[in-house]
Amino acid sequence: MKNIIRYFGRPMHEARRAGINVTLAVGIAGLSFAQQAHATEGGVGRPITGMQVMPYAGVVPPTSDWIVSLSTIYYQGSLGASKTLPVAGTITAGLNYQIVYSIANAVKTWGITAGGWNFASSFGVPVQYTNASSFHGILPDDHATQFADIFFTPVVAGYHLTKTDHVALSVQIYAPTGAYNPNRLANAGQNTWTFTPTISYTKLFPAQEIELSANYGVEFYTTNSATNYHNAPLSVLDLLALKRFKGGWGVGVVGGWIQQLGDDTGDLASQTDGARGHSLGIGPIVTWSGAIDKTPVSASLRWVNEFEVQARPKGNAVLLSVGATFQ
Image 1: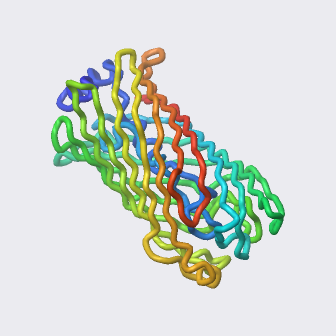
Image 2: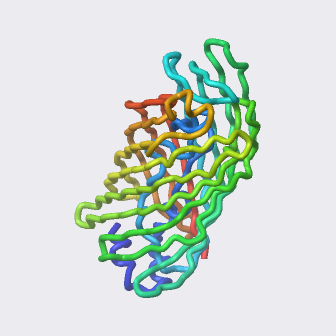
């Protein structure tokens, strides 16, 4: 972390030699999958509880680099028989979900500083395995491995408030490019555009080697043209606290709160009182950063348990991410 503090105001080549790799957060900010449920149509929504925030979430460096990351999320959750959601053209309850979502993401930092602002752009291509089953047998079991909706962020704008306080602004976008069939349980796509204005903030405590980061966004969905269903906006807040040690290791805690703002609209939504829902989750995170053959690399592993849930499946998610920075 001390290298990060010294980084601003240092020549770029010195920062790279120091092994600074703070842009993994830019690379996978907004990581999510289509079939994870959050009260939207199909009982699903894009964000995953506690998964949107990354280390150094508010930091966008002034370097001109490519950052490549590979990330995989495993999620397992269940919707109890007493809960109902719109899915596969009907209203149902008693669903089990097993999902593996993997995304290859590339980030380009622009190497431009304008009035204290630095900039980056990102693009991701995801693949998803979905296994959905109805444990009371109303709907047939379904599973598939499919391309999910592509994700891109045209501009991430970062501002360095001080050497220890950093903020980043962006609008993350999902395009309806993934596999989708309105009559299936297992869909990797949502058949909607999604726009997420997002603000990320990072506070560093260099003497203690501690980082506090937050990520907040509101997701806005277009209407699903196949079903005329319109998901209400989702408020997504994620928090991270991390303590770093020698050798590049760090341990900490992550948490998330997802809250639907308003009611869904459409015929099926009216049968479930708008399907308004929320979720809360918390869990541990382990990180590592260093260099392999002079190439800065970072990795992180986290587990988040959803302990308070309404109008969506309740479960656990594990995220493993690895990234590397190239000049």
